[in-house]
Length: 494
Image (tube, rainbow, N blue to C red; front, side):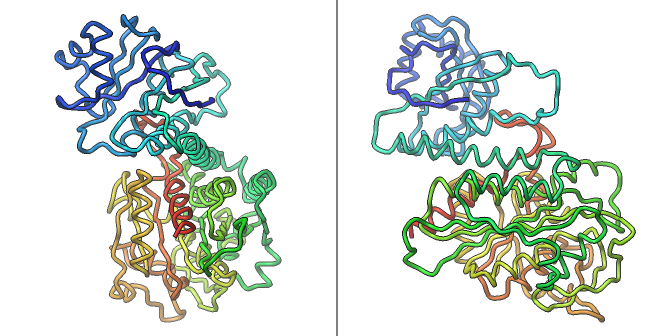
């Protein structure tokens, strides 16, 4: 799909369809009044009948409206106008694309309207359109080729910065889709070795530095926590390190480190998971996929701070050499860990990756991981759980999440919870008691972040959609990618 800008009057643009945002209530933009007049009061009739109420993501498709160059008019609800922001526009654009795609439309015009500045409207619309065009059906052989969008023109006002905003929106949307495509790969076709190859290819194409620590190097360094998880699989582990350096020497010592869990398949190991739903454990590498995707975008957007990604990738299998409950491993930091539950493997591989990131000079850390089922119990499928040891840094990340339209919710990390991580034989157990499981998992990671400003994103409930939404299909979401791109860009700007 290609995106371009148009500054012509929307009603005069010849296209298969024209998509316009409408709101709940009486307050509408002048464009709606003009289109209503051109169509002989059609829009007003639809609103009065309740067919186009303006409720969020509700659509009304009209064929052959008089007065318009396009043979179809799609009205897309965006909710109450006072609540309208970039996130709503992003979702409205995605809703328009998915609705028109299912109707066999191949190209259309989307009007990037609303009270935001024109560049913000264009960027949000582009992100929403690109993300909505993703399909998880890459291995279907009976694809319906007629259900595709080839081109979208974003109608906007001619203002400074709109062209750059379009480019930025496309880059961010494509990064999100890159993470989704990786997460969607089945575990037999995306082993740790395959993920390394994908990262290497991306780095070559993007001009990023890449280093891959293999099993021998990790053993030499003493990454016992990571290697313990990997030892039950015939697939060798790796630690992928991607480095971005700004074109100009940075003016501060800030170095952002991004750590992403990449368990390409998680059986749970000896503490094996139930069979029901285990097929979804192919996306236990969604955190790592997201960090690779963020680096792909930053290579093009060029923030003014250095950023490095650290992606530990393993397969957690119950092979004859698998670690057992009760085993003791020594992490890279020197801390010893009693492995109580081999299905709590993500925190083990992240522990060594976080320590390595600190040793490589990262001054600020963010990790993302499909870490705990407990976060799903706490927050459901809509919010990422956010934990931190540094509130000002966390506040910056949460601000980026709001600006990027990603829902994230801060969780407690009081020292009281550390009392739940006690072992009589080692420095730490890898799990605590049942209650507050997402918090004790984060508390475990905090021990390895030490004093470095750090934020942990538990994306277990948000990395995969069980049901399609109007603006996004069922499947991987690429959650966190937009937020972390925004954070890196703003850290560079400040």
